[in-house]
Length: 318
Ligand SMILES: *[C@@H]1O[C@H](CO)[C@@H](O)[C@H](O)[C@H]1NC(C)=O
Ligand SMILES: *[C@@H]1O[C@H](CO)[C@@H](O)[C@H](O)[C@H]1NC(C)=O
Ligand SMILES: *[C@@H]1O[C@H](CO)[C@@H](O)[C@H](O)[C@H]1NC(C)=O
Image (cartoon, rainbow, N blue to C red; front, side, top):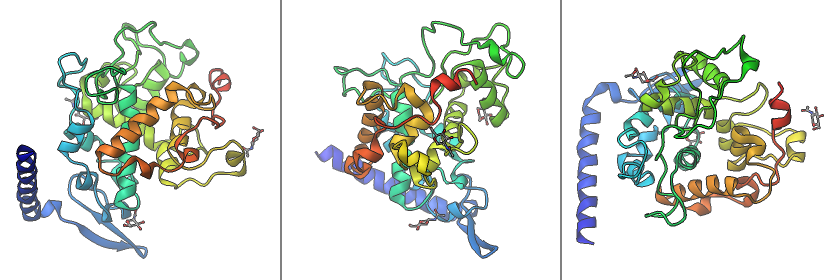
């Protein structure tokens, strides 16, 4: 008990020292101007582009090292598979280009915290090596992996031989924070991040900043034109059409699973693959002090009844 209180004091004092340093460094100061009647800001390295979103908090204002450590407390345990790979700094650095686009910075602090929990909930569930009797519980094991360990195939799809031809001697097995599989997914991600991932998919398992960056890019980018990104669906930038409503797709966490995984997870009823992602999100909401009750009703939280945006029978052949 005493030790805990003392730890808290140290954290508070460290935060005060940090605040001094930050105030002393003019590059970290909030700069404000008005463009076409809209207030836009920059905020140092973490929010360095002029954007209206930068007038609000940055992610590190509400999400700090100790919270990252709490969420991913077992990632450096001896039995984990990516010991020493993932860290807080990589996540914040990777988020830097996306915060001005609203990643973790849209709306209120509460919405920012929820989006961070939602994104990391996906990441935690996809990189977990937890199971029901694991120490610390099944949800303490996010970021245990940074790559697929026993790939059953090389994930080279010849259909894309003209657009994203497989490079000799490399394999396109799952790697990253929201694991990337297949030549075409490495190809399109690399194109957007301006990194040659088609010829060098291994970069993703060598560089945690790149691994987080690829995942945040996926979160911020629609899978197909005219569809919402997971970010847009989560923060409510997206307005469902009549078709969406008929397909039970509403803004919220459930629809982010629909966008990222389609009918692998959604429209299957109350299945484990879906519940595992939801459980990580709720666990992180609790650890961030937001509380799982902020996740909203089942209608927004799950996708059990949703029709997929992109049914796998049609995406596989397109
Ligand atoms: C900034 O936060 C306020 C509430 O704290 C919110 O109303 C506003 O929409 C936010 N601005 C942006 C650009 O996200
Ligand atoms: C890791 O990836 C980031 C983001 O793409 C890049 O800026 C950085 O230079 C890379 N680091 C190394 C050592 O290649
Ligand atoms: C609405 O859904 C129907 C049936 O799934 C589909 O045929 C139609 O193209 C959709 N309309 C729009 C505007 O997406």
